[in-house]
Image (cartoon, rainbow, N blue to C red; front, side):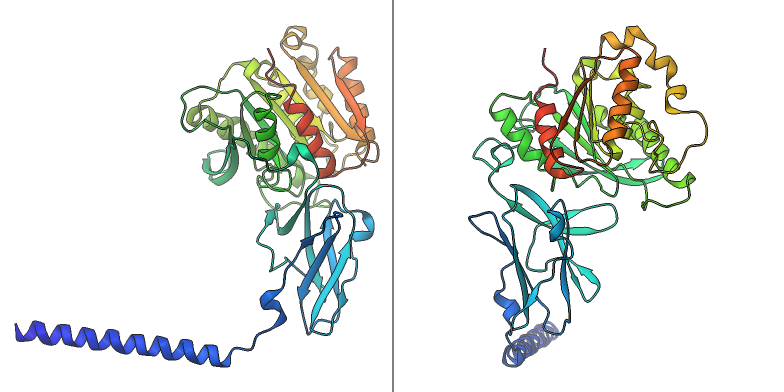
Length: 396
């Protein structure tokens, strides 16, 4: 008993000493902490006129510029003005409603906005994210909301773990019904987190389903890159990586979804679409496997190289048409294809590619719906394309 009493007493003394040290160190930190303007800094600030103020605390910097995507051209490299308190800021706009990625370039070093908790991943970096309200179809509304999950799966094709995002519609978790499945692919330099963040896919689908303009569906957003990517790599590398994704999609992603989610496996309950690189991947997946897809969407894209300009730099071997000739000529498979939909901006650098691809498909007897919209190769268009395409699929 005496031994136990001494042990408890020693433990209590140890805990008391620890508490005193913590209180002392906390008090010492509080006494020596020097407040800075960064403590109460707000950034970004979206104003009622849809202009945005960006701010960053960098008292020792000599130059701060803006970086970003989809903003008007004069936004990129726009200089922030240094204030007397060490805060750099600039107000830009008004900006069209939508989600925008941005970062700061401080003395040549690219950083995200540390005062903004909204971020958007891409293939090899991360961006800060700002949303400008004002476009009804992608607003956050008081409607039933679905869920977007980060799903980790093992890719046998690549022999490593991979990630994808999966949207399930309102009521999925509490029900037992099956749903049609829509595979939605991102573009070059991006990743599986693009459509859920800057693409606003979840909110777009929530609103369409709530208004009964779209059927409830499971939407699968996989990672289209299988490693680092940039234009200018040796010709074999980009082609190999696209092929790796196709193997991953056909051998792992699609089987995983059909095993682990309540989705239909019939052709008329399956759709696929993608933007830019993802549009090319869509055609590379769907045309050779046309018996499995009734709805195909291509946003700002086509068959790379079909117009003689291949940004991936791989023109060796048989052409895409030569590889897929038997599928392109199969009239029976075309009968079950309910929608083959293309859309590209008039200022898009891939406009001629889209036109050439559409012309080729029409020459082989495909019924192609094609539209050219305003704008270029940006999320401003791709969110609109998703909004339109999602209303046309799975309609009996």
